[in-house]
Length: 181
Ligand SMILES: [Zn+2]
Image 1 (cartoon, rainbow, N blue to C red):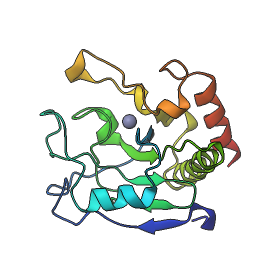
Image 2: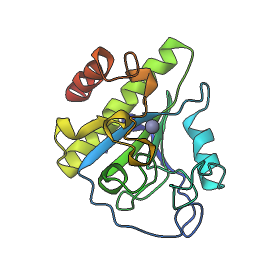
Image 3: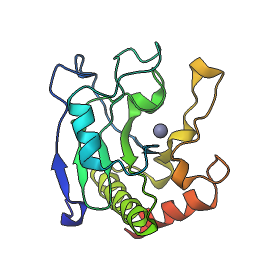
Image 4: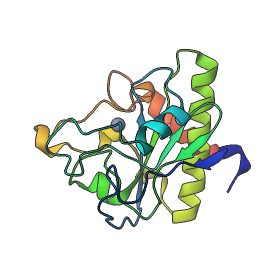
């Protein structure tokens, strides 16, 4: 694993906060999100997840919590969930949750910090791609997955990498960065 990832584990306690059930994940996709909470660091999100503070806002989330595998910011990567366990971050009972590793990029108002977080995410995606042999077209924005319980809506996420709420030039630039990482 590349040292530049700055990877640290802060796992959600086994048996709690979404990990009451262990559904096996065999990752064939990587789903990229952004947190929607400017200034919130990876460490802060790790604390929120590991203390059960990120509760579900919809009955369609059967675990009662939102949770994912990694959060990246400008200084580190925090892992919240083993990579062979399914998270709840994309599309409820859909294929996004059942086939993908979920990564949240922290949002920052300072362009240099935002850039550093995006670059760290690209490095993490590159490492995961090689570890699980995931093709570049299986690296997808949260937007890619259809929200069947919401009239097949596509969530405009990761908003920092979308153009007009959809994948476009920024997303393509991110994929190019992944390829170079
Ligand atoms: Zn998302």
